[in-house]
Length: 333
Image 1 (cartoon, rainbow, N blue to C red):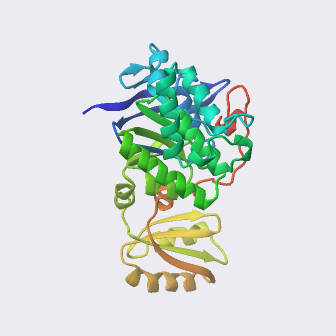
Image 2 (image 1 turned 30 degrees about the vertical axis):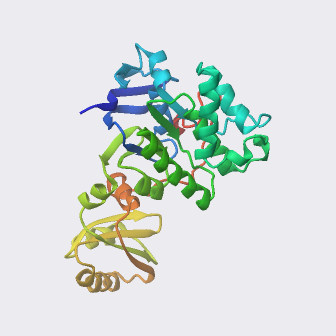
């Protein structure tokens, strides 16, 4: 089987003692959309910067299209397109000019470049806005333009770092549909980092869950949900949660696991109809009141909680080192 990406025991350390990426190994198959799912500071951007030759690993390495990121960085850069987390399109240029100048960077011949720019603006839905300044574009339009820019030289694969961060739900779905369309038409391998559960679930063929620099699990979204067992989830908010009560809940029949998400308990059960009366009885014995209760099927959020013991930290502020970029681990500061 041909692999688009092969990562072998890659490590990135920042002085004095922060390990941003901790002995990570995985492969990405040609033609798939591969997702790296984790919270801010988990090591996603650091990893993608190493894979795109913007940062050297401390140990280990990787290959893109068979090219070693240490030995052949120029060949790797020629083989990939990159869409960074920050919006970097030039506001003082038109959409056409933004793509055209990148085509020149990659030495795409003039005639081919013009045809390519025209095609890409059409496929991302910006054909009618090609001659407008990017300063007049919405956030979703700018992101679509930057995806087109990353494809100007017909790369072997495309790296996207948090491509829908800051976008409204409608714009986010437009980006998802666009990426699926591009993958289908160009037979492109896509590597995406995200902290949005729904994005990883709906868009990716396989997902690697990363937290504090380590890969916690890797499989298709459906297999990740299936493999943790317990297809019914009970979310319950109680008037009080004690460690003793948590231990008692874990011993209740049909309960497979119990995790805590802030003031809410996430209870994994084999049979919700049989488990629910027992749980309510246990709450009564513990003299606690039920403030909120809901039942739902498992999601990637539940998978993340299962492997990390906590909810994804979507709302945490992210500090930026302007010499290195966004995504530097929180412990570094």
